[in-house]
Image (cartoon, rainbow, N blue to C red):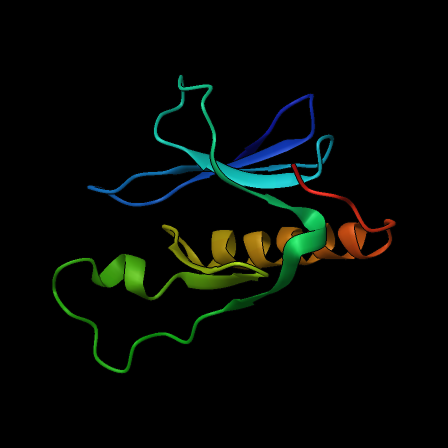
Length: 116
């Protein structure tokens, strides 16, 4: 996770299906791309459309494959879909939930936006 000068927080998921998630405070959208270099964004979500973000409980019995990632998950609910995301540490997951809740608050304080 990093924060750049343009107020973007970035995060990447695990091995096979890596996605590079960004919370863009300037544009007030949350989205992902398929690589660090790829400028094409997928599934953009306006801050106003974020309903909630919460930590997932650790699994009662972790499987061998991906056990580390399973215990560091969080859920992002939007008007159109839910994202179940996993990170490499519990600290990162907690920071993402905090940042997404902040984005939701920002979106909630804005007048309704007409989406393209």
